[in-house]
Length: 539
Image (tube, rainbow, N blue to C red):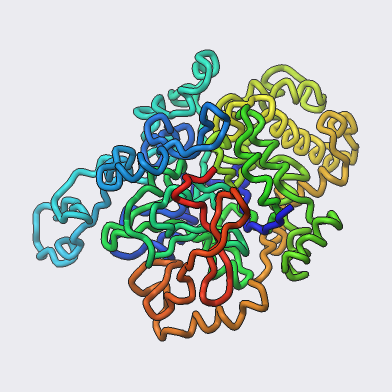
Protein backbone atom coordinates (compact mmCIF):
# COMPACT_ATOMS: atom_id res chain seq x y z
CA UNK A 1 0.00 0.00 0.00
CA UNK A 2 1.37 3.38 -1.05
CA UNK A 3 -0.69 5.93 0.85
CA UNK A 4 -1.29 9.41 -0.56
CA UNK A 5 -3.33 12.40 0.54
CA UNK A 6 -5.64 14.24 -1.83
CA UNK A 7 -7.49 17.51 -1.34
CA UNK A 8 -11.00 16.78 -2.64
CA UNK A 9 -14.30 18.61 -2.98
CA UNK A 10 -17.96 17.66 -2.75
CA UNK A 11 -20.80 19.89 -3.98
CA UNK A 12 -24.39 19.51 -2.79
CA UNK A 13 -26.42 20.34 -5.90
CA UNK A 14 -29.62 20.68 -3.90
CA UNK A 15 -28.23 23.92 -2.48
CA UNK A 16 -26.93 25.53 -5.69
CA UNK A 17 -29.11 28.51 -6.62
CA UNK A 18 -27.25 29.37 -9.82
CA UNK A 19 -26.07 32.79 -8.64
CA UNK A 20 -22.64 32.36 -10.30
CA UNK A 21 -20.86 34.09 -7.44
CA UNK A 22 -18.26 31.31 -7.51
CA UNK A 23 -17.62 31.89 -11.21
CA UNK A 24 -17.26 35.65 -10.83
CA UNK A 25 -14.92 35.54 -7.84
CA UNK A 26 -12.78 32.85 -9.51
CA UNK A 27 -12.66 34.94 -12.69
CA UNK A 28 -11.59 38.05 -10.81
CA UNK A 29 -8.95 36.15 -8.83
CA UNK A 30 -7.38 33.94 -11.48
CA UNK A 31 -8.36 34.83 -15.05
CA UNK A 32 -8.66 38.60 -15.29
CA UNK A 33 -5.58 38.90 -17.51
CA UNK A 34 -4.97 39.26 -21.25
CA UNK A 35 -5.38 35.96 -23.05
CA UNK A 36 -7.91 34.53 -20.61
CA UNK A 37 -11.01 36.45 -21.67
CA UNK A 38 -12.86 33.26 -22.58
CA UNK A 39 -11.47 31.19 -19.70
CA UNK A 40 -13.63 30.15 -16.76
CA UNK A 41 -11.82 27.87 -14.31
CA UNK A 42 -15.16 27.69 -12.49
CA UNK A 43 -18.40 27.78 -14.44
CA UNK A 44 -22.00 26.93 -13.54
CA UNK A 45 -24.00 25.10 -16.18
CA UNK A 46 -27.73 24.55 -16.42
CA UNK A 47 -28.72 20.94 -16.91
CA UNK A 48 -30.15 19.72 -19.21
CA UNK A 49 -27.99 21.58 -21.67
CA UNK A 50 -24.96 21.18 -23.92
CA UNK A 51 -22.56 22.88 -21.51
CA UNK A 52 -19.36 24.87 -21.85
CA UNK A 53 -17.62 24.34 -24.17
CA UNK A 54 -20.39 23.04 -26.39
CA UNK A 55 -20.99 19.28 -26.17
CA UNK A 56 -17.89 18.75 -24.02
CA UNK A 57 -19.41 15.48 -22.76
CA UNK A 58 -19.45 13.94 -26.25
CA UNK A 59 -16.22 11.94 -26.17
CA UNK A 60 -17.00 10.37 -29.55
CA UNK A 61 -16.31 13.87 -30.84
CA UNK A 62 -13.51 15.08 -28.57
CA UNK A 63 -11.79 11.78 -27.63
CA UNK A 64 -11.04 12.81 -24.07
CA UNK A 65 -10.32 10.60 -21.08
CA UNK A 66 -9.37 6.93 -21.09
CA UNK A 67 -10.71 3.71 -22.57
CA UNK A 68 -9.76 0.04 -22.45
CA UNK A 69 -8.00 -1.60 -25.38
CA UNK A 70 -8.63 -5.13 -26.62
CA UNK A 71 -6.48 -6.54 -23.83
CA UNK A 72 -8.28 -4.59 -21.11
CA UNK A 73 -5.46 -2.10 -20.62
CA UNK A 74 -5.98 1.63 -20.20
CA UNK A 75 -5.18 3.86 -23.13
CA UNK A 76 -5.93 7.48 -23.93
CA UNK A 77 -8.85 8.07 -26.24
CA UNK A 78 -6.74 10.71 -27.96
CA UNK A 79 -4.29 8.01 -29.04
CA UNK A 80 -0.81 6.82 -28.23
CA UNK A 81 2.52 8.61 -28.50
CA UNK A 82 2.86 8.36 -32.28
CA UNK A 83 -0.65 9.60 -32.96
CA UNK A 84 -0.29 12.53 -30.58
CA UNK A 85 3.08 13.53 -31.99
CA UNK A 86 1.60 13.48 -35.49
CA UNK A 87 -1.02 15.97 -34.33
CA UNK A 88 1.22 18.48 -32.61
CA UNK A 89 0.56 21.12 -35.27
CA UNK A 90 -2.82 19.98 -36.64
CA UNK A 91 -5.12 18.65 -33.92
CA UNK A 92 -8.73 18.02 -35.04
CA UNK A 93 -9.89 17.30 -31.46
CA UNK A 94 -9.51 20.84 -30.16
CA UNK A 95 -12.57 22.99 -29.38
CA UNK A 96 -12.61 26.23 -31.33
CA UNK A 97 -13.45 29.65 -29.95
CA UNK A 98 -17.00 29.12 -31.24
CA UNK A 99 -17.31 26.05 -29.01
CA UNK A 100 -16.40 28.23 -26.05
CA UNK A 101 -17.61 31.70 -27.02
CA UNK A 102 -16.05 34.83 -28.50
CA UNK A 103 -15.71 37.33 -25.66
CA UNK A 104 -17.16 40.77 -26.36
CA UNK A 105 -16.31 44.21 -25.05
CA UNK A 106 -17.82 47.66 -25.37
CA UNK A 107 -16.33 51.15 -25.76
CA UNK A 108 -18.32 52.71 -22.94
CA UNK A 109 -16.68 56.11 -23.47
CA UNK A 110 -18.96 56.62 -26.48
CA UNK A 111 -21.93 56.41 -24.14
CA UNK A 112 -20.37 58.33 -21.25
CA UNK A 113 -19.15 61.18 -23.45
CA UNK A 114 -22.18 61.45 -25.75
CA UNK A 115 -23.08 65.13 -26.31
CA UNK A 116 -26.18 66.52 -24.66
CA UNK A 117 -29.32 67.18 -26.64
CA UNK A 118 -29.30 64.00 -28.74
CA UNK A 119 -32.73 62.99 -29.98
CA UNK A 120 -31.80 59.28 -30.01
CA UNK A 121 -30.20 57.24 -27.24
CA UNK A 122 -26.55 56.54 -28.14
CA UNK A 123 -25.69 52.86 -28.54
CA UNK A 124 -22.46 50.95 -29.00
CA UNK A 125 -22.12 47.70 -30.90
CA UNK A 126 -20.21 44.91 -29.15
CA UNK A 127 -16.70 44.30 -30.39
CA UNK A 128 -14.63 41.15 -30.18
CA UNK A 129 -12.14 41.19 -27.31
CA UNK A 130 -9.91 39.06 -29.53
CA UNK A 131 -9.93 40.94 -32.85
CA UNK A 132 -11.52 44.28 -32.01
CA UNK A 133 -13.98 43.86 -34.87
CA UNK A 134 -17.75 44.41 -34.51
CA UNK A 135 -19.57 41.18 -33.71
CA UNK A 136 -22.93 39.72 -32.81
CA UNK A 137 -23.22 37.97 -29.43
CA UNK A 138 -24.64 34.52 -30.22
CA UNK A 139 -23.23 32.31 -27.44
CA UNK A 140 -21.63 32.53 -24.03
CA UNK A 141 -20.31 30.52 -21.13
CA UNK A 142 -23.72 30.86 -19.48
CA UNK A 143 -26.00 30.98 -22.52
CA UNK A 144 -28.38 28.31 -21.20
CA UNK A 145 -28.69 29.81 -17.73
CA UNK A 146 -31.93 28.64 -16.10
CA UNK A 147 -33.03 27.12 -19.43
CA UNK A 148 -32.62 30.45 -21.23
CA UNK A 149 -31.37 28.80 -24.41
CA UNK A 150 -32.21 25.18 -23.68
CA UNK A 151 -35.42 25.22 -25.71
CA UNK A 152 -33.23 25.55 -28.81
CA UNK A 153 -30.20 23.45 -27.89
CA UNK A 154 -31.33 21.14 -25.07
CA UNK A 155 -32.03 18.20 -27.36
CA UNK A 156 -28.31 18.17 -28.18
CA UNK A 157 -27.38 17.30 -24.57
CA UNK A 158 -25.06 14.25 -24.89
CA UNK A 159 -26.59 12.74 -21.75
CA UNK A 160 -29.99 12.56 -23.42
CA UNK A 161 -28.50 10.74 -26.39
CA UNK A 162 -27.22 7.99 -24.09
CA UNK A 163 -30.58 7.50 -22.37
CA UNK A 164 -33.17 5.03 -23.57
CA UNK A 165 -35.84 6.45 -25.88
CA UNK A 166 -38.52 5.93 -23.23
CA UNK A 167 -36.52 7.77 -20.55
CA UNK A 168 -35.47 10.56 -22.92
CA UNK A 169 -39.11 11.13 -23.85
CA UNK A 170 -39.78 12.17 -20.25
CA UNK A 171 -37.46 15.16 -20.67
CA UNK A 172 -39.60 18.01 -21.92
CA UNK A 173 -38.47 21.47 -23.01
CA UNK A 174 -41.84 23.14 -22.70
CA UNK A 175 -42.76 25.70 -20.06
CA UNK A 176 -43.97 24.06 -16.82
CA UNK A 177 -43.11 20.59 -18.15
CA UNK A 178 -39.33 20.66 -17.91
CA UNK A 179 -36.81 20.61 -15.09
CA UNK A 180 -33.47 22.21 -14.42
CA UNK A 181 -30.64 22.12 -11.93
CA UNK A 182 -27.33 23.90 -11.77
CA UNK A 183 -24.02 22.08 -12.12
CA UNK A 184 -20.91 24.00 -10.94
CA UNK A 185 -17.73 22.65 -12.52
CA UNK A 186 -14.03 23.06 -11.82
CA UNK A 187 -11.00 20.94 -12.68
CA UNK A 188 -11.51 17.47 -11.21
CA UNK A 189 -7.86 17.07 -10.05
CA UNK A 190 -8.20 13.41 -10.96
CA UNK A 191 -6.30 10.50 -9.47
CA UNK A 192 -5.63 9.27 -13.02
CA UNK A 193 -5.50 12.55 -14.98
CA UNK A 194 -5.53 12.13 -18.77
CA UNK A 195 -4.19 15.66 -19.26
CA UNK A 196 -1.01 14.83 -17.35
CA UNK A 197 -0.41 11.69 -19.36
CA UNK A 198 -1.01 13.38 -22.71
CA UNK A 199 1.40 16.29 -22.17
CA UNK A 200 4.42 15.75 -24.48
CA UNK A 201 6.63 18.18 -22.56
CA UNK A 202 5.81 16.92 -19.06
CA UNK A 203 4.56 20.35 -18.00
CA UNK A 204 1.41 18.97 -16.41
CA UNK A 205 2.03 17.32 -13.07
CA UNK A 206 0.17 16.14 -9.98
CA UNK A 207 1.58 17.30 -6.67
CA UNK A 208 2.54 14.44 -4.42
CA UNK A 209 1.71 16.15 -1.15
CA UNK A 210 -1.94 17.03 -1.90
CA UNK A 211 -2.80 15.68 -5.37
CA UNK A 212 -3.46 19.09 -6.95
CA UNK A 213 -2.83 19.07 -10.72
CA UNK A 214 -0.80 22.06 -11.95
CA UNK A 215 1.04 23.31 -15.03
CA UNK A 216 4.73 24.22 -15.05
CA UNK A 217 4.72 27.31 -17.26
CA UNK A 218 8.45 27.03 -17.92
CA UNK A 219 8.02 23.59 -19.45
CA UNK A 220 4.75 24.18 -21.30
CA UNK A 221 5.25 24.48 -25.05
CA UNK A 222 1.61 25.02 -25.96
CA UNK A 223 1.12 21.64 -27.67
CA UNK A 224 -2.52 21.61 -26.40
CA UNK A 225 -2.66 17.83 -26.07
CA UNK A 226 -3.87 18.41 -22.51
CA UNK A 227 -6.91 20.25 -23.84
CA UNK A 228 -7.83 17.32 -26.07
CA UNK A 229 -7.18 14.67 -23.42
CA UNK A 230 -9.19 16.33 -20.63
CA UNK A 231 -12.73 14.92 -20.95
CA UNK A 232 -14.13 17.75 -18.81
CA UNK A 233 -12.43 20.40 -20.99
CA UNK A 234 -11.07 22.22 -17.97
CA UNK A 235 -7.64 22.98 -19.45
CA UNK A 236 -7.42 26.19 -21.45
CA UNK A 237 -4.82 27.90 -23.61
CA UNK A 238 -3.87 31.49 -22.86
CA UNK A 239 -3.83 32.91 -26.39
CA UNK A 240 -1.55 35.72 -25.25
CA UNK A 241 1.22 33.57 -23.76
CA UNK A 242 0.51 30.37 -25.71
CA UNK A 243 0.64 28.38 -22.45
CA UNK A 244 -1.87 26.00 -20.91
CA UNK A 245 -3.70 27.15 -17.79
CA UNK A 246 -6.21 25.47 -15.51
CA UNK A 247 -7.86 25.56 -12.10
CA UNK A 248 -5.18 25.37 -9.41
CA UNK A 249 -7.65 24.57 -6.61
CA UNK A 250 -6.41 27.85 -5.14
CA UNK A 251 -3.35 26.01 -3.82
CA UNK A 252 -1.82 29.09 -2.12
CA UNK A 253 -4.96 29.27 0.01
CA UNK A 254 -5.01 25.49 0.57
CA UNK A 255 -1.39 25.62 1.76
CA UNK A 256 -2.44 28.25 4.29
CA UNK A 257 -5.34 26.08 5.50
CA UNK A 258 -7.98 28.21 3.77
CA UNK A 259 -10.73 27.06 1.37
CA UNK A 260 -10.74 27.85 -2.32
CA UNK A 261 -12.15 31.19 -3.46
CA UNK A 262 -15.19 29.51 -5.02
CA UNK A 263 -15.89 27.74 -1.72
CA UNK A 264 -15.29 30.79 0.41
CA UNK A 265 -17.73 32.94 -1.55
CA UNK A 266 -20.40 30.31 -2.28
CA UNK A 267 -23.76 31.83 -1.36
CA UNK A 268 -25.54 28.48 -1.06
CA UNK A 269 -22.79 26.96 1.13
CA UNK A 270 -22.90 23.87 -1.05
CA UNK A 271 -19.16 23.10 -1.19
CA UNK A 272 -17.17 20.87 1.13
CA UNK A 273 -13.39 20.57 1.19
CA UNK A 274 -11.27 18.02 2.95
CA UNK A 275 -8.47 15.46 2.82
CA UNK A 276 -8.95 11.95 1.47
CA UNK A 277 -6.37 9.19 1.90
CA UNK A 278 -6.02 6.77 -1.00
CA UNK A 279 -3.86 3.86 -2.06
CA UNK A 280 -1.83 4.87 -5.10
CA UNK A 281 -1.07 1.24 -5.92
CA UNK A 282 -4.81 0.59 -6.37
CA UNK A 283 -5.49 3.45 -8.79
CA UNK A 284 -4.60 1.61 -11.99
CA UNK A 285 -6.76 -1.41 -11.16
CA UNK A 286 -9.70 0.81 -10.19
CA UNK A 287 -9.54 2.74 -13.46
CA UNK A 288 -9.26 -0.50 -15.46
CA UNK A 289 -12.39 -2.36 -14.31
CA UNK A 290 -14.25 -3.73 -17.30
CA UNK A 291 -17.84 -2.85 -16.41
CA UNK A 292 -18.42 0.91 -16.27
CA UNK A 293 -21.08 0.36 -13.61
CA UNK A 294 -18.34 -0.96 -11.32
CA UNK A 295 -16.21 2.19 -11.59
CA UNK A 296 -18.02 3.95 -8.71
CA UNK A 297 -17.40 1.16 -6.22
CA UNK A 298 -13.88 0.64 -7.57
CA UNK A 299 -12.95 4.25 -6.90
CA UNK A 300 -14.52 4.20 -3.46
CA UNK A 301 -12.42 1.11 -2.71
CA UNK A 302 -9.26 3.12 -3.48
CA UNK A 303 -10.02 5.48 -0.59
CA UNK A 304 -8.69 4.51 2.82
CA UNK A 305 -10.45 4.82 6.15
CA UNK A 306 -8.57 7.55 8.08
CA UNK A 307 -9.74 6.10 11.40
CA UNK A 308 -8.20 2.69 10.65
CA UNK A 309 -5.10 2.26 12.86
CA UNK A 310 -3.22 0.52 10.03
CA UNK A 311 -3.94 3.42 7.66
CA UNK A 312 -2.87 5.99 10.23
CA UNK A 313 0.35 4.12 10.87
CA UNK A 314 1.05 3.94 7.14
CA UNK A 315 0.37 7.67 6.84
CA UNK A 316 2.85 8.42 9.63
CA UNK A 317 5.41 6.19 7.93
CA UNK A 318 4.86 8.17 4.71
CA UNK A 319 5.80 11.36 6.59
CA UNK A 320 2.37 12.90 7.03
CA UNK A 321 2.09 15.08 10.13
CA UNK A 322 -0.45 14.45 12.86
CA UNK A 323 -2.44 17.49 11.76
CA UNK A 324 -3.13 15.86 8.41
CA UNK A 325 -4.20 12.60 10.02
CA UNK A 326 -6.65 14.43 12.25
CA UNK A 327 -7.97 16.48 9.31
CA UNK A 328 -8.53 13.33 7.26
CA UNK A 329 -10.51 11.77 10.09
CA UNK A 330 -12.73 14.87 10.34
CA UNK A 331 -13.00 15.28 6.56
CA UNK A 332 -16.56 16.01 5.37
CA UNK A 333 -15.56 14.76 1.93
CA UNK A 334 -14.65 11.32 3.29
CA UNK A 335 -17.93 11.08 5.16
CA UNK A 336 -20.11 12.09 2.18
CA UNK A 337 -18.26 9.84 -0.28
CA UNK A 338 -17.38 6.74 1.71
CA UNK A 339 -19.35 6.71 4.97
CA UNK A 340 -22.77 8.03 3.95
CA UNK A 341 -22.21 7.23 0.24
CA UNK A 342 -24.40 10.05 -1.03
CA UNK A 343 -21.75 11.79 -3.15
CA UNK A 344 -21.08 10.65 -6.72
CA UNK A 345 -18.33 11.44 -9.28
CA UNK A 346 -19.02 13.30 -12.52
CA UNK A 347 -18.85 10.89 -15.47
CA UNK A 348 -16.84 8.04 -13.92
CA UNK A 349 -16.87 6.34 -17.33
CA UNK A 350 -14.05 8.68 -18.39
CA UNK A 351 -11.84 6.57 -16.08
CA UNK A 352 -9.86 9.54 -14.76
CA UNK A 353 -11.09 8.91 -11.18
CA UNK A 354 -12.24 12.51 -10.56
CA UNK A 355 -11.89 14.03 -7.10
CA UNK A 356 -14.70 16.59 -7.28
CA UNK A 357 -17.89 14.72 -6.33
CA UNK A 358 -21.55 15.74 -6.22
CA UNK A 359 -24.58 15.07 -4.06
CA UNK A 360 -27.27 14.76 -6.77
CA UNK A 361 -30.29 17.06 -6.67
CA UNK A 362 -33.51 15.66 -5.22
CA UNK A 363 -36.84 16.90 -6.55
CA UNK A 364 -39.61 17.85 -4.06
CA UNK A 365 -40.23 14.21 -3.20
CA UNK A 366 -42.91 14.75 -0.55
CA UNK A 367 -44.98 16.87 -2.95
CA UNK A 368 -44.61 14.18 -5.59
CA UNK A 369 -45.80 11.53 -3.14
CA UNK A 370 -48.89 13.55 -2.29
CA UNK A 371 -49.69 14.28 -5.94
CA UNK A 372 -49.52 10.55 -6.66
CA UNK A 373 -52.11 9.90 -3.95
CA UNK A 374 -49.63 8.13 -1.68
CA UNK A 375 -48.76 8.47 1.98
CA UNK A 376 -45.77 10.79 2.49
CA UNK A 377 -45.00 9.09 5.81
CA UNK A 378 -44.83 5.58 4.37
CA UNK A 379 -41.33 4.40 3.45
CA UNK A 380 -42.48 2.22 0.55
CA UNK A 381 -44.52 5.04 -0.99
CA UNK A 382 -41.58 7.44 -0.75
CA UNK A 383 -39.10 5.00 -2.26
CA UNK A 384 -41.48 4.05 -5.10
CA UNK A 385 -41.94 7.71 -5.98
CA UNK A 386 -38.20 8.21 -6.51
CA UNK A 387 -38.47 6.94 -10.07
CA UNK A 388 -41.35 9.28 -10.85
CA UNK A 389 -39.67 12.53 -9.82
CA UNK A 390 -39.49 15.54 -12.08
CA UNK A 391 -35.76 15.10 -12.60
CA UNK A 392 -35.51 11.68 -14.28
CA UNK A 393 -33.29 9.26 -12.40
CA UNK A 394 -31.96 8.06 -15.76
CA UNK A 395 -30.62 11.53 -16.53
CA UNK A 396 -28.81 11.79 -13.21
CA UNK A 397 -27.43 8.28 -13.74
CA UNK A 398 -25.87 9.33 -17.05
CA UNK A 399 -24.13 12.19 -15.25
CA UNK A 400 -22.92 10.51 -12.09
CA UNK A 401 -22.92 6.70 -12.33
CA UNK A 402 -22.19 5.85 -15.98
CA UNK A 403 -25.86 5.04 -16.49
CA UNK A 404 -26.31 2.84 -13.40
CA UNK A 405 -29.87 3.77 -12.42
CA UNK A 406 -29.92 1.58 -9.32
CA UNK A 407 -26.87 3.28 -7.80
CA UNK A 408 -28.34 6.73 -8.42
CA UNK A 409 -31.76 5.75 -7.09
CA UNK A 410 -30.10 4.39 -3.95
CA UNK A 411 -28.52 7.78 -3.24
CA UNK A 412 -31.81 9.60 -3.86
CA UNK A 413 -33.58 7.19 -1.52
CA UNK A 414 -31.11 8.02 1.25
CA UNK A 415 -31.68 11.73 0.74
CA UNK A 416 -35.46 11.31 0.62
CA UNK A 417 -35.42 9.14 3.74
CA UNK A 418 -33.31 11.72 5.55
CA UNK A 419 -35.84 14.44 4.71
CA UNK A 420 -38.81 12.36 5.83
CA UNK A 421 -37.08 11.15 8.99
CA UNK A 422 -36.05 14.64 10.08
CA UNK A 423 -39.49 16.01 9.21
CA UNK A 424 -41.22 13.43 11.41
CA UNK A 425 -38.74 13.85 14.24
CA UNK A 426 -39.06 17.64 14.17
CA UNK A 427 -42.86 17.79 13.91
CA UNK A 428 -43.94 15.20 16.46
CA UNK A 429 -40.76 13.57 17.75
CA UNK A 430 -41.47 10.19 16.19
CA UNK A 431 -38.65 7.94 14.98
CA UNK A 432 -39.42 6.40 11.58
CA UNK A 433 -37.55 3.11 12.01
CA UNK A 434 -38.90 1.76 8.73
CA UNK A 435 -37.13 4.56 6.88
CA UNK A 436 -33.85 3.78 8.63
CA UNK A 437 -34.20 0.08 7.84
CA UNK A 438 -34.88 0.89 4.20
CA UNK A 439 -31.59 2.72 3.74
CA UNK A 440 -29.45 0.73 6.17
CA UNK A 441 -28.45 3.69 8.35
CA UNK A 442 -28.79 4.40 12.05
CA UNK A 443 -30.57 7.38 13.55
CA UNK A 444 -27.26 8.93 14.59
CA UNK A 445 -25.87 8.58 11.07
CA UNK A 446 -28.95 10.17 9.48
CA UNK A 447 -28.89 13.09 11.91
CA UNK A 448 -25.14 13.59 11.37
CA UNK A 449 -25.67 13.50 7.60
CA UNK A 450 -28.52 15.99 7.91
CA UNK A 451 -26.36 18.36 9.93
CA UNK A 452 -23.52 18.15 7.42
CA UNK A 453 -25.73 18.67 4.37
CA UNK A 454 -28.07 21.28 5.85
CA UNK A 455 -26.66 23.35 8.72
CA UNK A 456 -22.94 22.59 8.96
CA UNK A 457 -20.76 25.50 10.10
CA UNK A 458 -17.71 26.86 8.33
CA UNK A 459 -15.16 24.70 10.11
CA UNK A 460 -17.27 21.59 9.49
CA UNK A 461 -17.54 22.20 5.74
CA UNK A 462 -13.87 23.09 5.25
CA UNK A 463 -11.36 20.88 7.05
CA UNK A 464 -8.06 21.80 5.44
CA UNK A 465 -4.73 21.34 7.20
CA UNK A 466 -2.01 23.84 6.46
CA UNK A 467 1.03 22.80 4.45
CA UNK A 468 3.63 20.62 6.11
CA UNK A 469 5.47 22.62 8.75
CA UNK A 470 8.75 21.43 7.28
CA UNK A 471 7.79 23.25 4.06
CA UNK A 472 6.96 26.55 5.75
CA UNK A 473 10.41 28.09 5.27
CA UNK A 474 10.51 27.13 1.59
CA UNK A 475 7.04 28.54 1.00
CA UNK A 476 7.93 31.80 2.73
CA UNK A 477 11.13 32.08 0.72
CA UNK A 478 9.21 31.49 -2.48
CA UNK A 479 6.65 34.16 -1.59
CA UNK A 480 9.30 36.76 -0.73
CA UNK A 481 11.70 35.99 -3.59
CA UNK A 482 10.12 38.72 -5.68
CA UNK A 483 8.74 42.05 -4.55
CA UNK A 484 5.85 41.60 -6.95
CA UNK A 485 3.08 39.13 -6.28
CA UNK A 486 3.81 35.94 -8.20
CA UNK A 487 0.18 35.75 -9.29
CA UNK A 488 0.37 39.12 -11.06
CA UNK A 489 3.53 38.48 -13.04
CA UNK A 490 3.84 37.11 -16.54
CA UNK A 491 3.14 33.41 -16.63
CA UNK A 492 -0.27 33.24 -15.02
CA UNK A 493 -1.74 32.10 -11.75
CA UNK A 494 -0.30 29.27 -9.77
CA UNK A 495 2.70 29.16 -12.05
CA UNK A 496 6.19 30.55 -11.73
CA UNK A 497 7.83 33.86 -12.48
CA UNK A 498 11.44 34.04 -13.54
CA UNK A 499 12.47 35.05 -10.04
CA UNK A 500 10.78 32.12 -8.36
CA UNK A 501 10.92 29.54 -11.14
CA UNK A 502 13.41 27.40 -9.25
CA UNK A 503 10.82 26.78 -6.54
CA UNK A 504 8.65 24.75 -8.92
CA UNK A 505 11.04 23.67 -11.67
CA UNK A 506 10.74 19.93 -12.25
CA UNK A 507 13.72 17.66 -12.61
CA UNK A 508 12.91 14.15 -13.79
CA UNK A 509 13.92 11.49 -11.33
CA UNK A 510 13.47 7.84 -10.64
CA UNK A 511 10.39 5.82 -11.54
CA UNK A 512 7.72 5.59 -8.88
CA UNK A 513 7.80 1.82 -9.13
CA UNK A 514 8.88 -0.70 -11.78
CA UNK A 515 6.35 -0.66 -14.58
CA UNK A 516 4.39 2.11 -12.90
CA UNK A 517 2.84 5.05 -14.73
CA UNK A 518 4.70 7.88 -13.08
CA UNK A 519 8.04 9.58 -12.83
CA UNK A 520 9.01 11.20 -9.56
CA UNK A 521 9.86 14.87 -9.96
CA UNK A 522 11.84 16.68 -7.30
CA UNK A 523 11.71 20.45 -7.05
CA UNK A 524 14.63 22.47 -5.79
CA UNK A 525 12.83 23.15 -2.50
CA UNK A 526 12.93 19.43 -1.74
CA UNK A 527 9.20 18.80 -2.26
CA UNK A 528 8.20 16.05 -4.63
CA UNK A 529 5.60 15.70 -7.36
CA UNK A 530 4.91 13.03 -9.92
CA UNK A 531 3.85 13.07 -13.54
CA UNK A 532 2.31 10.39 -15.70
CA UNK A 533 4.94 9.26 -18.20
CA UNK A 534 3.94 11.07 -21.43
CA UNK A 535 5.91 8.68 -23.60
CA UNK A 536 4.00 5.65 -22.34
CA UNK A 537 0.59 7.31 -22.47
CA UNK A 538 -0.16 6.43 -18.90
CA UNK A 539 -1.53 2.95 -18.18
